[in-house]
Amino acid sequence: MDFQLPEEQKLFQESVRGFAERHLSSGALKRAHNHEYPYDVAKLMSEQGLLGITIKEEDGGIGGTLLDAVLAIEQISQVCPRSADVIQAGNFGAIRTFAEYATPEQKEEYLPGLLAGEKVVAVGMTEPTAGSATTDLQTTATPDGDGFRINGEKVFIGNSEYADVIVLYVRFGPGLGGIGSVLIENGMEGYTKGAPTPYLNGERWVSMFFDNVYVPKERVLLGPGGFKKQINGFNAERIGNTARSISLARHAYRLARDYALDREQFGRPICEFQGLQWKFADMKVKLDAGQLLLYRAATNADRGLPDPQETSIAKLFCNQAGFEICNEAMQVMGALGFSQDSLVEYCLRRCRGWMIAGGSLEMMRNRIAEGVFERRFSQRPPRVATAEAAE
Ligand SMILES: Cc1cc2nc3c(=O)[nH]c(=O)nc-3n(C[C@H](O)[C@H](O)[C@H](O)COP(=O)(O)OP(=O)(O)OC[C@H]3O[C@@H](n4cnc5c(N)ncnc54)[C@H](O)[C@@H]3O)c2cc1C
Image (spheres, rainbow, N blue to C red):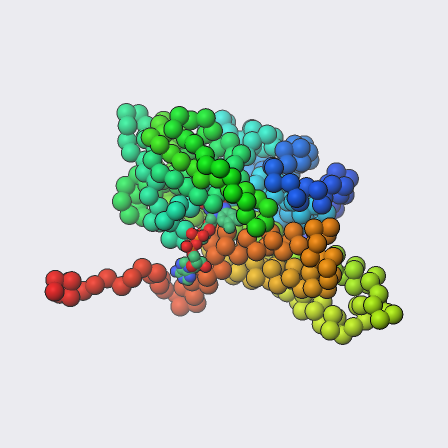
C-alpha cells in the first residue's frame, strides 16, 4: 500500500494550484459572498481542462480519474473556496450521471455547453413530501404520443435558479421500478420557477413547477427501472460533497494556524497556549483521517462509480469533521473568525449544508449499518398482519 500520490498526480496538483494562485486568489472573499454562479471562473476552468475531468475523452472530457477531480477540488479550495463549486458542478453529480447514461445524441446536445463552462446542470430529486425518502417522489411522467407529460414540483435543488438543464427524477409508474429520469430545459412550456430563497450557506434555491411539460422520448435519460443506476451515479456527487467538506475544513484550519502563529495576547503568540495547541492536534487528526477515507473511496472507484459503503463512510466522517474543524478554527480566530472579513465563517456555513445535502448524516449511518450487518433495514413502518388489519 502506497500513501504517496504518483508523480503524474503530484504534477497535476501543482498545476491546478498554480492556476488557482494566478487566477482566483484575488477576489476570493468577494466571490464567497456572491450568490450568482461564477461563469467567468467556469470559462477559465474549462480552458484549463478542469471541467469534465472524469468524463471520457471521446465525449469531450479529460478522461481522468475520480481522484484527479478530488485533487482539483482540494487545490482550488485552498485558494478560493467558492470557485470549488465550479469544479463540483463540472465533474461530480448531475454531469457525471448524465455522461454515464446519456445517449450519444443527448451527449452531443448538452455536453459541449456544460464542458465549456457556459451552461449548468442540476439534479432534481427532492420534493415537498420526498426528502430522505427519495423513492416517495410523486412527479409523474405520463405517456403522451411520442413522449411524456411531466407534472409535479421539486424543491431545495442546488443551482436551481440558473440551471440550463435538469436531470429530473420522475415516476413513470408505481414503486421503485417506476422511477427514472428525464432532461428538462429552461424555457420548456409549463416549466416555471418560484422566488429564490437563500440558504444559510449563501446559495439560493427556487421551487420548480412542472405543469404538463411535454418531454419528447429523446429526452428520457433513464426510463422506468433507472433508479438504481441514478443512485449509483449519485455516489460520485457524494464524493464531491465529501471532498468539499474536508477541503473547506483545511482552508479554515490553515487560516486559523496562521492566525495562531501571529496573534499575540498576554504578551505571547496564542499558539503557545496549550488550550489552543490541543485544538490544532484534534483538527489535524480529523483532516488526515478524513482525507484517507476520501482517497480510499475515490481511488477504489477509479474511472467507474464509487462503492456506496466506502462513500457513505467517507461522507459521514468528512461532513462531520469538516463542520467541527471549521467551528474550532472560528473559535481560535475569535471575532475575526466570526466576521465576514475572513473566509472561516463561509467555510463553516458551507460545511453545515453538506451534512444535509446529498443524503443526510443519519441516512449515511443507516447505509453504513446495513453494510455492518450485511442486510437491508427497511425504514418503512412494519406491515400490519392481514388478520390484524381485518379487525
Ligand atoms: C445545500 C443543499 C443542497 C441541496 N441540493 C439538492 C440538489 O441538488 N438536488 C436535490 O434533489 N436535492 C437537494 N437538496 C435536498 C436534500 O437532498 C434534502 O434536503 C435531503 O435529502 C434531506 O431531505 P429533507 O430536507 O426533506 O429532510 P427530511 O428527509 O424530512 O429529514 C428530516 C430529518 O430527519 C432525518 N431522517 C429522515 N429519515 C430518517 C431515517 N430513516 N433515519 C434517521 N433519520 C432520518 C434526516 O436525516 C433529517 O435530519 C439539497 C439540500 C441542501 C441543504
